[in-house]
Amino acid sequence: MLDLVNVSKLFNPGTLDEKVALMNINMKFSPGDFVTVIGSNGAGKSTLMNVISGVMKPDTGEVRIEGSEIQQLPEYRRSRWIGRVFQDPMAGTAPRMSIEENLAMAYTRGKKRGFGWGVTTSKRNLFREQLQRLGIGLENRLSAKVGLLSGGERQALSLLMATFTKPQILLLDEHTAALDPSRAELITQLTEDIVSELRLTTLMVTHNMEQAIRLGNRLIMMNKGRIILDIPEERKQSLTVSQLLGEFERISGQQLSDDRIVLG
Figure 1 (cartoon, rainbow, N blue to C red):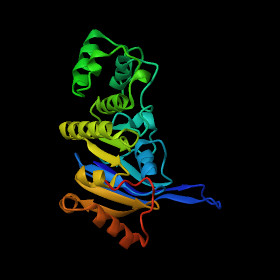
Figure 2 (figure 1 turned 135 degrees about the vertical axis):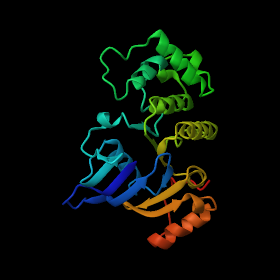
Figure 3 (figure 1 turned 180 degrees about the vertical axis):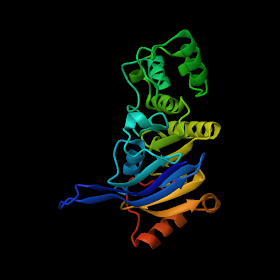
Figure 4 (figure 1 turned 90 degrees about the horizontal axis):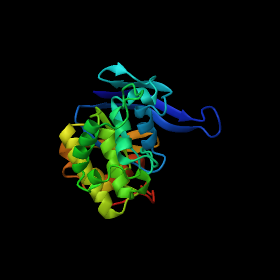
């Protein structure tokens, strides 16, 4: 479904500042896989997301969806297959536009926009119906400017927008990290519900090790641009944070010392 074949990415190649961002990444995802991705700063997590989404092109290797190579396609061309939610609640939405205008733009993802992105009565009814699923009252605030929403409300809207057209792949880049615990738990639950309902193939970067273990059916740990652990569902179900830390130390020969890592 989604395959990465020998994908590598260097920053500042051939200079003293050369850095390995990704090195020979090989990953295969089946439809409906929910994969959590964890690792310290500089491990390559965000670069992995950027290469899949089209923000960056790999130096070598292939990115395939349904067997077709897409590594040369720009980000906007990939949006028909890929939705993404970022860590910053301010990203992924247009703050000066209303909730319904933002949803109207999301509705046209992967289509020729022209004048067809405007809000019609039928679209407005659809938007209300979809917003009701969030359970936070946004269906009654369609004309509210998105910039006036709270961080949690905005992230919930971003999640809905990213999945509105039922993409095949959902990328979640630490999408709960900037929220307070109660809002983070709300977005986490919404994520689980939407991913399960739509059977989206999902990659979720997180610094919360407990969350990485609890969510999804597969866990990947990265270090220095490489995948050092790929834990399947049957093993993940009994995994503990201390065991995960021990595996990292055994394989890498060092302790996980990133201050942003949350042990749960």
